[in-house]
Image (cartoon, rainbow, N blue to C red; front, side):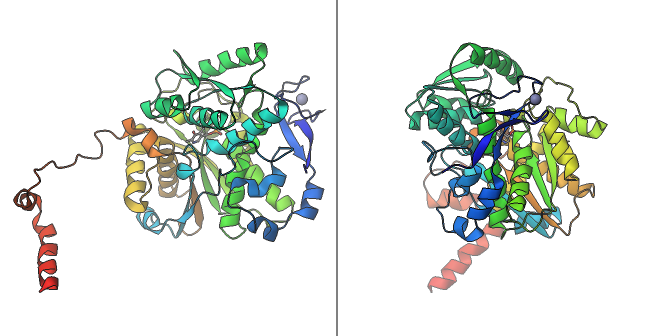
Length: 422
Ligand SMILES: *Cc1c(COP(=O)(O)O)cnc(C)c1O
Ligand SMILES: [Zn+2]
């Protein structure tokens, strides 16, 4: 049972049948999946969704598959957390985190897009899955291709974090490190995609892949009790996630599951890779490509495919955009961990850091609901915080040695235990 009508050019609106293509033959605009929203509206209710399994597939009518997903059946429905301790530090009233650092199976939001893309690739009959990646996509494609019994070829900048390399190789993929930036990796992959019948999840399957990101937005709305936060801060690499969260909110409104959407969307980048933020601040609607240099490697895209549409989302929702330095990213990662017990990767440091900055600047008010997107897991980017979190004390296994390191302040608990046992 499928509600997909076809593909449509976002620019000239020409329509295409469902096939593995991503650009319009006439104007080179990006293609997007079109649904029969009238039919979905007739058949899908809040109660129906709430009764389904707690995965992203509870919104399957709004995803572009013809059949049940072939891979990633347990992806999504990650925790939405009310972050009161972080709220107190930031001096705001109502703060939430959407935590895809614990998404299944590879601990980033990329499992949402890849489970759709790999399942769609299987429907199309592809036997090889491929991608150009800044790291998390590599992990997810390798894992979900393995689950689907498909061969995979994964292309990354050669100098990625160790955790992201290991977390790809373990699945038995063909991993190719390119001596160049992500943008160069992507250019090479576009050329390969023209010559090999491979499913590049973020190139020829991009229209389907991108739809998976909408579930991040659907879940936020449902988990907040079918309403959306007033302010939503989203990390931007290629700029797909931010546009799809907005699209997701709008779709829920269109099919009558939300009474209205008055959210403002904020784009977050690292200062060392901020092409979208820079364009926003300059007030232009085109992107000046950059050569990224930042510890937030998962977001290090200098020529973002959806940069133009990200700017459109930010402006349409009356949000804003900001960037933070590598130093601020590390501080924000530590702040989140110490206040909420969540260890995010550098991209989460970017969204937490940018949120703090926007609050301090008075752009996000302190008395309205705010949601910060946490999209990846800190265990994958350990390099970023190495030497920044202290070291364990090493002692011999002797009670006397232990007593030497206890501070006078900690010693008070010794006495209270002695009293309690008398
Ligand atoms: C890929 C990625 C993003 C951004 O995704 P885009 O859709 O390309 O903007 C954000 N956070 C993490 C951790 C990512 O891996
Ligand atoms: Zn077109």
